[in-house]
Image 1 (cartoon, rainbow, N blue to C red):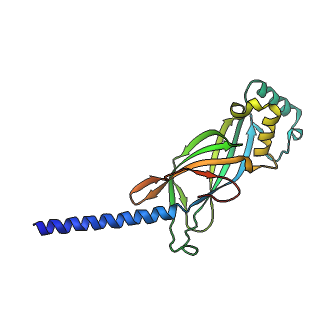
Image 2: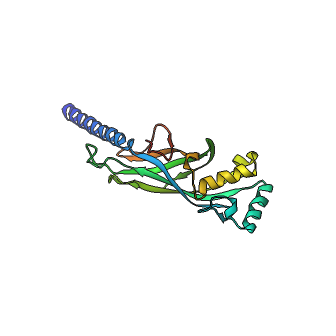
Image 3: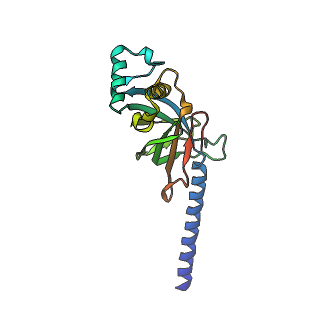
Length: 204
């Protein structure tokens, strides 16, 4: 009886060891997922689209008056889609193994001009296949620019809005602070630290 019990315990320990090794291998692969701020689409301030516009001169008189009026009300509500690119390089060609990845949860915070602003969470699973091609994760963002930058004045606030969503979008002023949670054989496990994502290169 003791011999059978010992065999069962050894088998359980061995199974646990294999599972642990699988988890470590999975996490090692998933840490290589890379992120980049791809672009900003459909940028609006108070419902006024700025996409394709280079500055206030490209707006009609009605929209120009509307923007100045909402600023005097201590508001400057913006809405846009920020596209986050995720790349899984574990395609089995440039790496030893091919491993698809699933992000089960993604915490994010938007940073503009090095100022932390609004935050959010994507709780739907995101598949990152091991194809060597990036996957676009769209983040729909709403924030009041006046709340964070209103003290800089109307002109600088306009400049920021057009720099973010206008024809000459300057993504150097945009960063994302993210914390992904990934699926493993033991269940969802969050990354041990946060990642600062920029637009110039992929970060992991």
